[in-house]
Image (cartoon, rainbow, N blue to C red; front, side):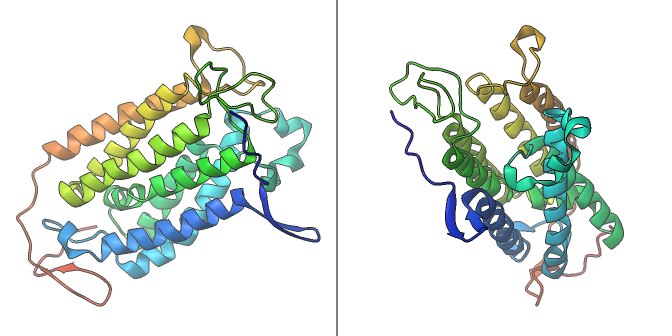
Length: 289
């Protein structure tokens, strides 16, 4: 198959360009924000504990998380994949429009931002994390589609009939691994977390939704690293390991621990939920931060 060769620039006005990659991040923030607020305001999800934050607090949180994603994603890419930029071309680190964002770095940035926000607002950080990660697959889908449009992060050579010849990937057909990631890290992971939040009501169990996200994402990423072409500048790790595999393994271990811990913890008694201006609140329950 031939790569569709979509222009990565949606609109060009003089020196000003609007790129699909940038739009993917903007859409991720906006859609993730509204989805999270919708979950906070949905009284059917909070059967044993009230939401960890109000809708207004989620509005404030978005700025913190946006900074965490951008700063963490860029610094993660530099530290994990291109550390030579630190001493060869440090100004390139600031040029995020050239591409180069690490999911694992962005996740760490979100973690730091979320912890800081929870501490400042006296919110249960673990339960806040459960709410945040439920929306993450929206970004996982959109950003991977943008990677595909950019013709970057393609997969290893393949003889499969759906293999594509990418503009900068040489003459051999390759796995369109960006589309695999969009499907698994985006659509499938979203459905798994949606099942956890809306069917199993696991937002009432501290850390379980976050643990499920970490475990599922880590396993998906480890599996897809087998068809994703490692960056040419990365060293060869033993046993066929890649940087993505090594960064994802701790996610799986931490995720399994959080699921185990959260499911063992007894649930408080069921609560009566009433509608309020800023979302559902528990009648007669004052949960500690």
